[in-house]
Length: 315
Image (cartoon, rainbow, N blue to C red; front, side, top):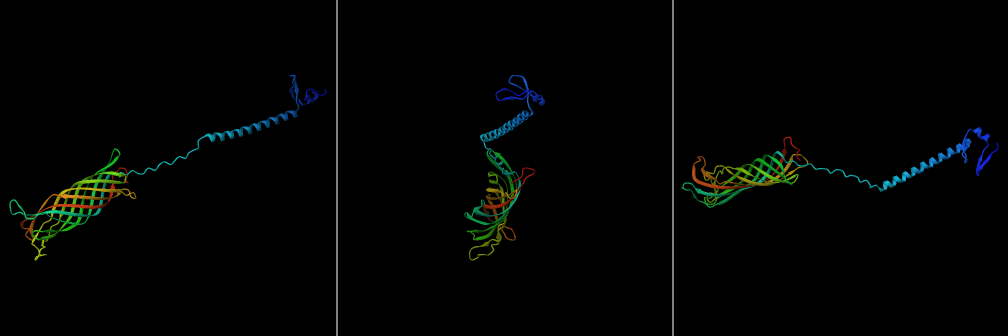
């Protein structure tokens, strides 16, 4: 059979040629026509090319779409590191301290004749005083409590001062003089303070105190013609009782936990003490007396080591 043209541009091969290939395809008239192997290979290559182009187009589209979405998204902001929390100072606990300082004492004196009833003042008031260095040892306990926005420290303590505060006592009436020395003072009391910062405490203190003054011996004349001669009399040592008020600052030293530095001013006032004038050697009562009211002021700087019992660390 010869080749036929079934439509413009479509050439059908002969039936004998088609039967040799074993392939068929539909014609525009609905009947089955057989196709050649060359036509099948061309269709497969054409479909593969279309699939590659389609895959490439999808990849390009996805790339552009990803960039567009990334451009619309807000930029990432790096999170700031969490703030470093400073350690909170804890003032609750007990402590011991030692310090040195400087002090002044002053006294108001009146001389009496005790051989009369009532005794008679034989001098007006005359003031004397002294000054010098002192050292202090102290122990106490504090408790920190919050009161609203305030951090308050309440504590109790006791201390002892070793003193070398001496001065010259002179009687303007009888012309006698001697050296008087405050040798020690001790106190018990409490304090209350406010933490201006976690490391700085400002406080007030107060309590009971006693001071020891050594004997005035010898008592000598300080008027001519007997200047420097022993009168044969002396005033024995005495203990004076009184109260004190103080204020101070205490600072936590960051380079060593539990170590503090404080400076305190203290004012002490003592009750009037009556001192009998005695004879040297026999301690016989001479009938003369001197009443003294004493005042002491000190400034002390101390190094404090504070510790607690199983509580939070101290800073």
